[in-house]
Length: 242
Length: 394
Image (cartoon, rainbow over all chains, first blue to last red; front, side, top):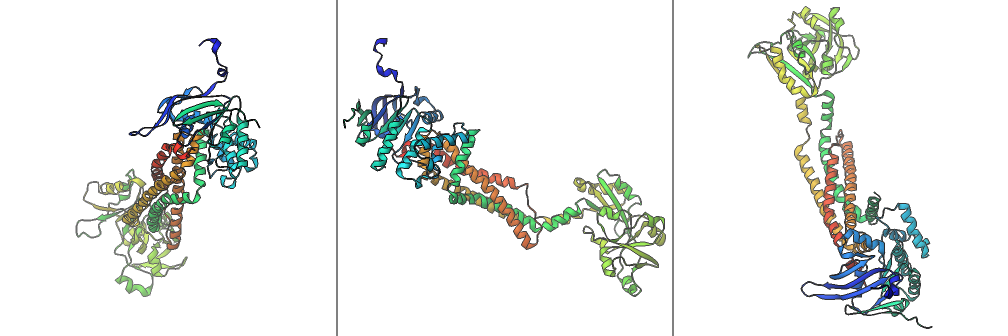
C-alpha cells in the first residue's frame, strides 16, 4: 500500500472488524447462520443492520457483542482477536467496549434503576461511592434522576429503555449495540429513544442498531442489509428530503 | 478487595430480593443445626444437675479402705499411713479416720436402749478431714488442734445423725460415748461422695486414744489427687501404704459412680444427632433444588450480567456465595434456635442447662459445607448459561 492511496476512512479507526466470519449451528446437520461475512465498524459510525427474519441479524448481534464466537473467521474488537481471549478477558473487553440495549429492556427486576446502571460498573475496583455517583450521573443525563430509586415495574416502557440506555453508556463504551431498541415502545417514546441514540453517536463512538423497522433504519447514516446469512448491501443512508 | 466486596453485595442483594425463598432454603441448615444443638443440649441437660454436682464435688477424691485377710476383725492401716500416702507426688491432701466400733453413742437417757441395739458409728478423725472432703460445716466448727492440746471432749455430728438426734442450730448438747459425755461443737455438711460420714459421730484422735484406748491405726483414708492422676493415684495407694507388706488396701473413686450416672443417654443423643444430620442433608437437597430453579428463573439476569461484562466465574461465584450465605446464616440461626430450645425446655423441666458450645462451630461448619456443596451444581449451571440464549435477541 502506498502513501498516495490511503483512503479517507483510514483516518477513522476500526473499532470492530469481522473478517470472513461464519457461524454454523448444529453438528450433524450444519446450518449456516452467517456465511463468510466481513464488516468493519468505524469510530463515528451510526449503522443500522436490517433484514428479514432468519437473515442472520441475531447471530450478527451476538458476534458483534462478543456474546458468541465465530465458527470460522476472525473478529477483532479494538484490535483484539476475541477467539484467542479467555472468558474473563473477553468479558472485560465486552464490559469496557460495548454497551447493550435490548428490545425487552432487560433490566434486573429486583434492582432499582440506579442498581441496574451500577451493575455495569461492578468488578472494576471502583469505590461504592464513585460507582453510585457515575451511575446517577448517567441516569441524570437521560432525565431519570428522580427515578433512581424506582424498580423497573414502577416505570413506563420508555423510562425502562432509558435506564437500559444509561446502563449502556455509563461505562463510556466504544460501541452501543442495540437490538430493536424501539420494538416494545409506542411511537412517542420510540421517537424520544431514537433522539437519544442520535445524540449518543460521536466521532469516537459507533452506534449499531439491529432492526427491521424502516423508521429506525432511516435514522442511521449507514445501512447494512442482510439476507440468508450474508451482507447483501452496505451503503450510506441518503437523508430524506422533508 | 473491592471486587470481593462487589461480589458480596451482589450475592446479598440476590438473597434479600427474594426473602421468602431465601428463608425457605435457609430452613434446611436452620433445622439441621438446631436439631443437633438441641439433641445434644437436651440429653446433656437432662443430667445437668448430676454434672453440676460432679463439678462441685470434684472427681479427684479417693477413699482407701483397710482390708484384712478373710475373717479378720477390724482391719487397719499402719499408724503412719497418711504420711506414706502423702509421699506420692500426685497426692495433694490426705486425712484419716478410725472406726471406734466398741463405742456406743447415746444422745439422751431415754434413747439408751435403742442406741445400744442400733449403734451409731463413732470415728476418730484428723483435724483436716472437712478440707480434704471439701465439705463445709453445716453448723459450729470442726475438731481442731485446741481440742487435742486442751484435751477437750468435743464431738462433731454427721449431717444425718444431727437430724436423727434432732440437734438444733447452736444448741448446747452432749452425747454420751460409753460413759463419757462429749460436747457437740458442730455439724458436718452432707458428704455426697461418702454417705457413711453423714451417719457418724466424730471425735479427735487424742480422745479416742485416751477414752477408748485405740491404737491410733486408721481404717479409712480420704485422699485428694491431682485432677488428671486420680485413677493412677488410686492404683498406687495400696503399695504406698503396705510397702509390699501383708496389709490389704482397697481404693475407690466414689465420683465414678456419679460420673456414670451423669452420662447422657448416648443412644438417644445419637439418634437425635442422626435426625439432625438427615435434616441437614434434606435441607441441602432443598437448596440444590431451589437454586437450580432459581438459576432458570434468573437466566435473564445472568444474560444481562454477562452482557455488561461479568465473566462466567463471576456469575458462578455470585450463586455460590448466595448458598454460602444461606449456610452461614442458617447455621447461626439454627444454633441460636437450638440453644433457645434447650433453655426453654430446661426451664420447664427444671434442668440445669448444659450446652456443648465447643461442638456448635463444628455443626455450623457442617451446615456450611452442605450448603456450598448444594450450591455447587446450580452455580456451575449458572456460569455455563449461554447469554445469547437467555437474552432472546430479536
